[in-house]
Length: 197
Image (cartoon, rainbow, N blue to C red; front, top):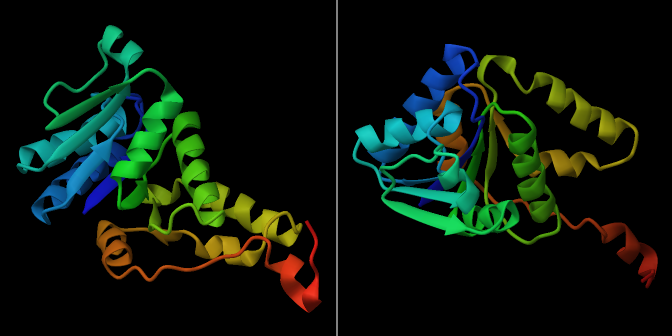
């Protein structure tokens, strides 16, 4: 199994995020899983791959070519896949992964989370998505998602498409004991024999 870790590339974040990511990468390798990540050598990306590499794990980095020019790519990946665009990069990471762990991050991480969540909502995959909520980092985002349900912009079933882990143990428990949840975004069209579009 390959576990994709999404997370920040920043080195300016609290050490708790970097240390938890490095330990997560180490545990992924110790369990015999592969790590898929965005090939960066800084921030949570770098911490997770250092943990996996140090424990002898198989690591798959995926990067657009311009990050190589910027010299921000981790140079000890078991496999390094180079793409032309960020969009292509995400697609390969999604295809290579059997599960997703969303560590703390900024705009890029938010985008990655919402993309895999939307794809799952549309039944393009049925892989586990685990939000690793270190230090309560994602509490406000989770509240935003709850508010979207309250305001009828999404159904409460959407919140079953991902799980939230506050500890590393919970991350692996939720991945290893994952039961796919089938969600039909357009089920309401099929009620009472409706044949709308």
